[in-house]
Amino acid sequence: MPSKRVSILILLPEIYIIAGMKAAAPILNPLFLSIFSAVICLPPLAWLNNKGISSSLAVFLVVGVFRVFMLSVLSMLLPSNFLFIRKILINNPQF
Image (tube, rainbow, N blue to C red; front, side):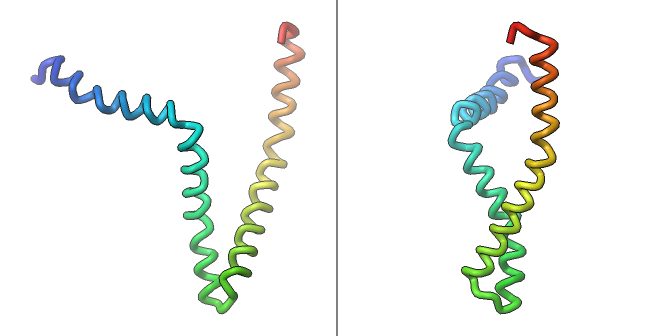
């Protein structure tokens, strides 16, 4: 059975890493979002390149489709968020 001191020494670096990531969130969030977007957009881009479409046109098409998809998702989510905020403001007049 490990002692408490050993357990604390094992958990301490993880706590520092999590605290550092929380402090660096304004930098890490856009970075992770861009990496996620690149990973999502790479297969359609490679497929269009394999079909003989030039790279610049393929990038334009993939980014355009990605933007349309994101705007459609936002257009579905924003009205419900506005209704939720309105209910909060009506039920809690101190805000």
